[in-house]
Image (spheres, rainbow, N blue to C red):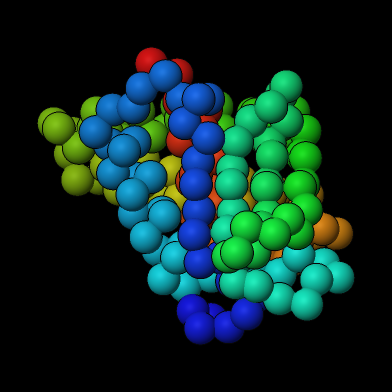
Length: 158
């Protein structure tokens, strides 16, 4: 749905919440943003349509979706407690670290196993995110996956 009114046309991460990123995380961030902009379905409940400019950040242990129109007019802010996502994010990071290390010298079977686990946790996180924002923003599965990736990037510390 890349050409419709219910889509994100631009996304910005609040870089103040991230100390620094490794090459793998920076690559994931770039790919997620590119893929999200190319194709997404993003519909704030009760709004007549965008396209939207989305700011993602973290404030006081809450995830912030700052939704605006392309001209800068505010659509609304969605604040989401991070408590329900933290364990999935932590598990996802643990598996990702193992996966990136395994790529360097593990057997193909080990890499495949870790990749399967990584994808399963990514799906779990995106489903949870989609459920938690469903009463405020409707997103499709692929959009939720890309947003979950970006939320994880916001949690990288050093």
